[in-house]
Length: 124
Image 1 (cartoon, rainbow, N blue to C red):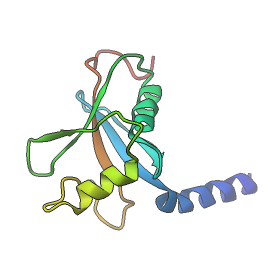
Image 2 (image 1 turned 120 degrees about the vertical axis):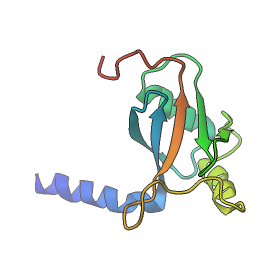
Image 3 (image 1 turned 60 degrees about the horizontal axis):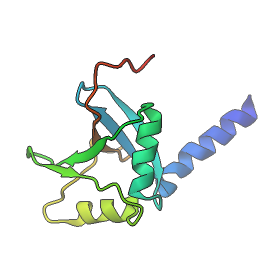
Image 4 (image 1 turned 90 degrees about the horizontal axis):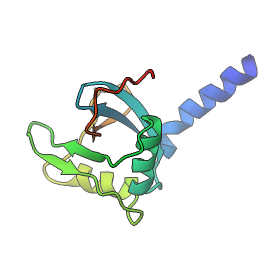
């Protein structure tokens, strides 16, 4: 048990340097965390979210610009990394994405999921 806890603690401690944390929120307000390695592609992000929610149809992922009602569709492409997209949105003026939790909590970005079906149970 001690070895397991040590390895888990190590993994959690290393995550911020290797991964981005996203809170994926559905239109019905259900949300969950998804973690992506920084050099994974946006195509990988779509796959991870689809697998996590057990979806086998087209989905749309987007960011909502803070303090606006504008949405930014995340392209489903293998040609851009998650790191590149986030760096572009974080460094824009004004920033188009920002962490959803205050320090000292870890940095988490919200992504919205439009899967056109909130009637399906997450627990099924």
